Amino acid sequence: MIYIYNDFGGTHTTSLAAAYHLKQLPQSERKLTKDEILKVPYFNKLTKDDFGKIIFHGIDEDGNSVYTIGRKRNKYVVPALKDMSLLLQEKFKFDEKIIFSNTSPTVPFAMSMGGLFSRGLHIDFIGVPLLVLGAKQCCDNIYRLVENTKEIGRTKYAENIIVLENEMYK
Image (cartoon, rainbow, N blue to C red):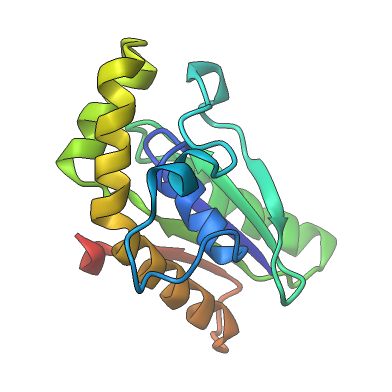
């Protein structure tokens, strides 16, 4: 199985989701610390050149691959990836389940502003504290989104390509 977490930039909520998925972060009974947040691989590290790149984060405890992608505002990226996956499955006769899980609904205002200042305007002394505040605000939602994504991955469905918009995590 392949999990692909996606959002606007692919460097904040997706990185946190991948870290939760891979058990690199503790469960959400408590808020994450600044240090834990800033040590997450790829958190606030990607640039505009990384948009649209599928980034490998690791293999989970069940042997499944975990990836992220930043799709910007383009609403066609995930549907195109779904169609490409279906085409490849049909042509090469493989049945790998792929789950695209949107982390955008979890993004709080502080994280949006932090991303703008840090990644967009390169003003880290304003952006990074906002990103940390935003990550603390949404860490529980991201954790619950990941647990739901993994549960759907374990469930039998007629389709092998599943797109989760995750609107319930707003």
